[in-house]
Image (cartoon, rainbow, N blue to C red; front, side, top):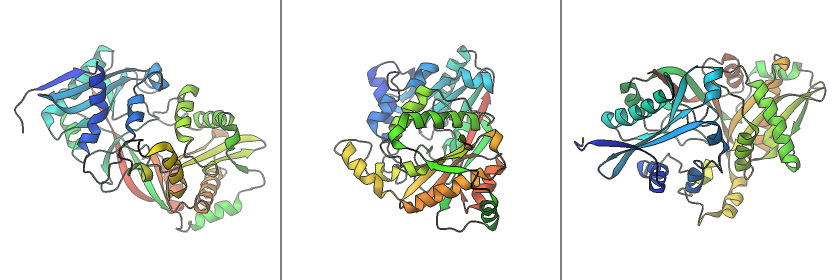
Length: 373
C-alpha cells in the first residue's frame, strides 16, 4: 500500500473532466467482462446542453489522486424531487470508481458527504448515477459475466470499501436471465387462456410516430410506477434525451402497448443489448462508426427487458402476463435468443412471481446502500 498522501479535488477544469470520464477505461483495462461505453457519450453526459437531467439537479464531482495518479472518482447529487417524494434531506453518491484501498475510498467519499451536508443533506443513498432512472445499485452477486445495457458494473471489493466507509444495505434489486425457449409454467398458460383477449388489444410501437408514441409511453410509465419506492416522474425533456439515444437500435416489435377500450392499460419495452456490439468497439466510435454499429444491431441475439408496467386501474386482469408473452413471441421471431429482466426490487413479489412463471432465473443482485451523516 502506498504511503503517498491522498488529495481530493473538485472537477473544475477540462483536464479534470477528461480525467473523470477516462478513469474507468484505465481501471478496467484487461477486464474481460466490462463493456467500455462510447467515450464521446460519457463526456456529453456531463454537458447541460446534451443532458437535460443536469438542469434539474445539483451535482458536484471529485477526483482523488496520489501524486499525479488519479486513483478514485465520485459524484455527489441532490435530486430535490426524490427528496420531496421519498426521503427528506437526502442525496446521492454515484459514478464511484476506486482502487482497492480503504484510505482512498474514505477520503473521496468524505469529500462528497461534506459537499452534500453543505446542501442540507443528512442521508446519502448510492450508488446512483444522477437519478433513479439511471444506473442504480452496487453489483454484489453475479460476477463473472458482462453487464447488460445500462446496468451497473463494479469489482467485488467495492462492497467492502463502502461498508468500511459506514454504508449499509437499504434495498436489493435483482436481474433475471430468461431463456426464451424455456416453457411457461401451467399457471401462465391458464392466465393467457382465461384472459379475455377480445377486450385487450395489443399493438407494437409505430416508429413513424416516434415522438407521439414516446409521449404515450412516458405517460403510462409515470402512471404505472408512481407508487414504486424511489420512483420520481420522468420529465419529457429527460425522456426524449434517452429515447433519442435508443432510437438507433430499438426494435418497434419489442415495444408493446396494451389497450382497453382505446385507452392504454399497460406497456412493455425490451431493448436489444447493444453491449454485445460495444464490447468490440473499445469505447471509440471511430473507426467503428455509426454505420457499422447500425449494421451490427440486427445480429444482436440478446436483449434487456427493461420495462413492464400496468396502470393501477387495470391491475389484476392478467395484462402483465399478456404483455410479457407478446414481447417473448416478438423477440423470438426477431432472432433474440436470451434476455435479462431487470431491475426488480426484492420486495416486488408480484413481478418476481411473473418472471419465475415465465422461466426466469435469478442472475445478479444490485444493492442500494445508505448512510446517515
